[in-house]
Length: 249
Ligand code: PGA
Image 1 (tube, rainbow, N blue to C red):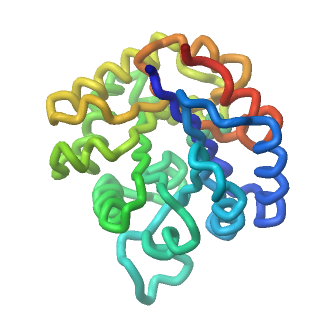
Image 2 (cartoon, rainbow, N blue to C red):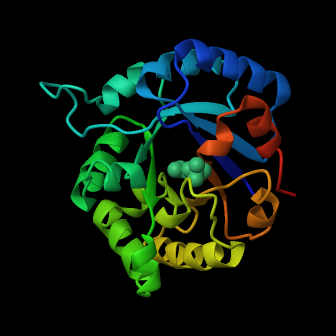
Image 3 (tube, rainbow, N blue to C red):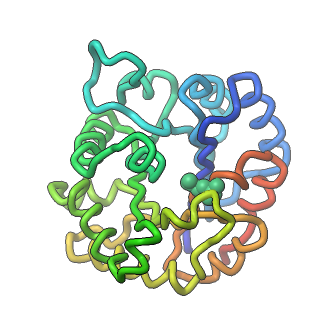
């Protein structure tokens, strides 16, 4: 059975009360399906409310949008893997393009965050992807492989198998301009071969960037895609409940 993962990145939206209301509405419209799981990435202040709201549903999980690699200390404004886990997080995004390009996160930062997440049993979702200039210069595969190697190159196969990769071309995020299913699938193949040579062929590879109800079916028609990471189209619980039921056998 093909197993799909649908991940909602709420970015800087949806406070604790709104998260409770959202997840009530979502749960009412979406019953568990064997072939998929749904992950929510709320802002840090809403982690606990969201985790509480899904605690009876094993197919629904909550994760942090970012963590800092130190477990504790004088790091004002940051949250650590153990703090996120205490609030109910089971996963964390790492190296989202907004972290890389707005906040200046480096490849080396993504490596340290991945190691910290695994140490505290948060499932890492490593985001990789090229800018428009990199794509136009023909550097897409080189950039993606550099990001993979930097963040994950030191992990053994068992730890690598616990990673979810999200391929998100930077030019497709929040722009309404998604990669064609073929473009996405060809980069997914490169990521899969990178994983396979390291003994982790079964790690999940998601696609992200302007995924919506309009394009989800054709994207998931590509067997290379194990699911999607979605920003804008995940903010409305009814639309998201509809989107997560598309695709699969
Ligand atoms: P988008 O965001 O779906 O709004 O393009 C995706 C993401 O940033 O993860």
